[in-house]
Length: 270
Image (tube, rainbow, N blue to C red; front, side):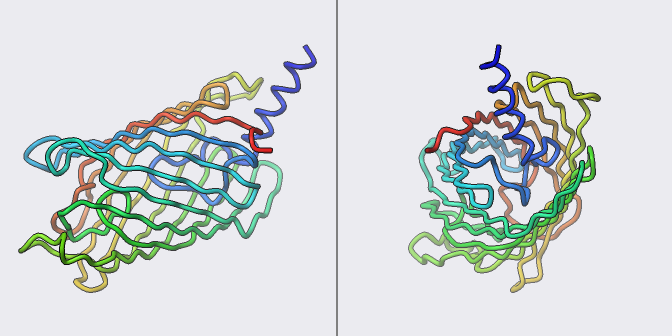
């Protein structure tokens, strides 16, 4: 009985640092995963804006070194260029530099960076460092928790590495890109928290935009999503993003669903 109580405290304490309603589906919050923990994700993305349906699979390993620093390692596999193959990888790091905590509310700010590689031969106007382009990215994210509602804003800047050997004649070769997002998450269930085994149901709505400073082309996507968290360790996401306004051509992430399963292992790093 005592052992079960201690185990419950571990799970509850782990997720108290990352409230369920700020575990956004299409973006990252300023909060980090629990210290000394490891997470494993498997994401599948499907795009309907091509003549044929194409999809991308993203296995991901996440490590929480301490309350302020975490890292992600991703691999990208897709059939965008014909047969399904490994197309690239990415390292993402986030450092939380500000945390203002109060009862049932907190404000957090973090800086993030990413370096990616991709062997895809096709370039689009959009700079997408999660499979389509090699490059680097940096930015900041601000997250505010207000009881059951979590709000977050992200601003980033990406630079794509140029490789003339992979450029297809007649297609655009992107260089730099501003990205920005506004995300909201709301905890639907449980209405009253009783124990860590209760499923959490969250609803999300995110605005995802980018602007190419060279051409002035831009877009803004709407991205609703649903999420369930089981036993405070297992997370399942389902979302869909679609363009609301924009004039950017040759996009791969336009009209895209996202399905993800995530498994967390707490207090496993010594």
